[in-house]
Length: 248
Image (cartoon, rainbow, N blue to C red; front, side):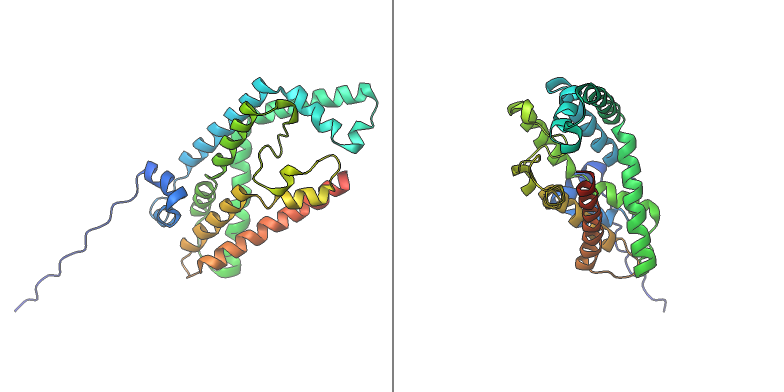
């Protein structure tokens, strides 16, 4: 007598794109598990790019890149000692660079994500045999990066409601201890180290670590994924702090 066929388990539908975006904030494991089904990452790239360009447009309208450049020169001990004519020339170059860089920020966002994904992809695959395709690594980075728009929104609100004269583009909102220090008098090494203790940045680090752990073919704990990602983040920040100290 033939055996009765076992009923097949219904296949769970994948998340819609809006659901993936929302879950990146409220239920990140769902988003990162869904990346195993679909490693598309153009939507978060588009969202991050829109917010980035909007932020630079607001800076241009509310403060002006000339003022931003001048403030950067005034708060730098080496640049502020240059002759006035040279300061003006340097400020003009800096202002133009900031403006062009701001409006081309999607290109820099894509490049930065490629580098971050590449470093972590090599670390997890060759160091831990995670066997994660690079397309998934890119998706993990971009979806993990989405909370950065919270920092962008807070910075925009601060810029609109606060005093534009005290605006610092590289650290525009008080989500880290360095924001509350005087940049011109604080050790640049200490300033960068304290700025790395940023609530939004650490949120992003945790999410990316979770994403790599969940997308590994070989079982990797969430704690390990977060630790590896955090280690690279603080190595980068330590190098940035050392470079800032040398330039000051």
